[in-house]
Amino acid sequence: MTTHKHGISENKSQVGLQLIQVFLVGLTIGMMRTVVPGLAESEFGLGNQQFLLLTSFVVVFGVVKSIMNLLAGRLSDYYGRKPVLIVGWVVAMPIPFMILYAQNWNWIIIATLLLGVNQGLCWSMTINAKLDLAHFWQKGLVNGINEFSGYAAVAIAGVVTAYIANLIGAKQGLFFFGIVVIIFGLILAIFLIKETLPWTKLDNKNFALESNFGKLFLHASWHDKTLRSLNQAGLVEKFTDAMVWIFLPVFFLSKNLTLVEGSAIISVYALVWGGLQLITGALSDKIGRRRLIVVGMWLCGLGLLTIPYTNHVFLWTLEAGVIGIGMAMLYPTLGAAVADFTPPKTRGAILGIYRFWRDFGYAVAALTLGIVTQMTVTLNIAFLFAATAMILSGTYVLIIVPSNKNI
Image (tube, rainbow, N blue to C red; front, side, top):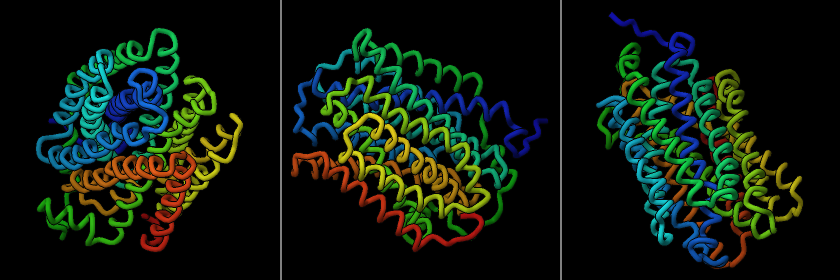
């Protein structure tokens, strides 16, 4: 009879395999983050002023991924983490082919829709599974190592795909890179990943929280002011990532940097974000979540605010690093803070609700920033708008979220 025990060290083999999984998931989204915005004009004729069309693929990604997060959490509580993970990889299979044979921008939008499904299902399952396996006092550490692995991969994929695009062409480079990553992820999920639902039954307790999903959604989204505050912070932080994903590649190209040079600067953001989460996730378990979330939101806002007013690669790299530090402080800590309020038997559902609002932020941010930029015909206003949103959101968390050792 198999004995299930909580703890990272007690389950190091499966935790390691799950880290490889999230690394592959990060590579999948990373390949779409720097090369695709560059393709908009060079391959599909989107002019410099067509900001709403440029943001459309991220709007679609945000809507789809947020819905998938919501469904994935609930489905995984019923059917298991592994089946949802496998489905996520299967859905991703057409993406490289759609990029390779894309005839217009609509193909990219549809490919991004499938990417949203993949990310919503696969990334959610990697963190849910590791939370299942870990001790309750390791939630921050688990979030940190998960996001480190995923966003280190995002950074690596951005630079590697930009380099490959220069060598053999953007479409061909994304195709070969993507197909290898997705097939490897699927094989790993099918043959090596174990189902982790049995671990959730070890510490299931009777909680007063209603298990009806509609009531859970209302509870997490509105009735509980602390969860509401954390959810809004998750949504608003996507203004930072949307700026980096959509507008930074365009901004750097407008400053006559090459795709590889711009990708290298953007990769600093992702590498700092990913690497420091190994520290910040565990640190939040010791000193509390709130101060890391608040300072992280403010740092991101200040970093965004300075980028359009500087004009040197060194300063842009430094600013990208500052934004990465801010994201490292807030990102794993937000997820861990939500998990502090989550009963094991509904952990997948409530974390899915948080991820719904967090990734719906992509759609809100991309649409809002696209409209603002289209109306003003300048990128500077988008940087100012996103920075203001981050600073105000962090202030709201400071006011609402209690200060104690857990959060």
